[in-house]
Length: 255
Image 1 (cartoon, rainbow, N blue to C red):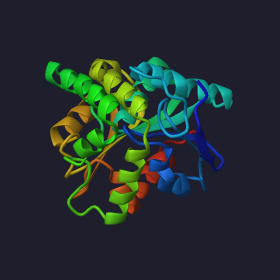
Image 2 (spheres, rainbow, N blue to C red):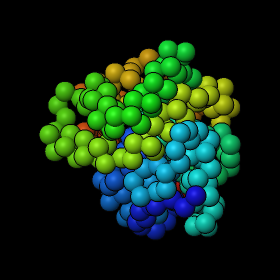
Image 3 (spheres, rainbow, N blue to C red):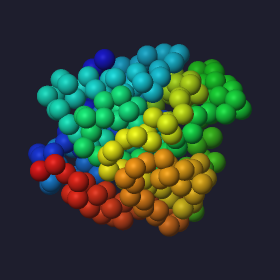
């Protein structure tokens, strides 16, 4: 699997993993902000952006293996891995399977909980609907919780266009993969890595209880809650998010 990716900067490596149903351009502000100090890699996950599509189902472990293969090909032995939403699940897969490869992790607007039976059924049904009716079905659902109340129209327009452009087959495969995700709490409990945990206070999915559970399941968490923003703190509160991420990475960078 050859992933499309953007790269900028030099120094210790930071990998930015987008969520669902987005692509690597979700991280454009962070790519620019971090490139003066770090080597920043932002891939398109399998089935999104310009990366090849695998239909039906792609597991979180498979997404993680693709990123591992990308890093191997680039000769990157260690990196900080930062993931948003589904990207956070992929980040935890990477950290749990090869903890020595990460010097820090960032978990943004995500969860450690496994899906409930109701959630699993809804994701499988949603995948079938996306395959049948197109991305509009998923975009309509995302509008129920994606944006905070003060999200700028320009951000909404850019993200809506990004979601509409996502391949339906790739988005459906990711929905099914998320329905089969494991319980990450025991996998992360023994991990001795600095971990930035970030969420918006107006996020109905990665809410205060979900975020507190993530923090409680980690040995070395550093939690940042950004007031008034929804599921995309890196775009809705770009300046505050960039400052928090940059400070965290600088504090823990190997060099």
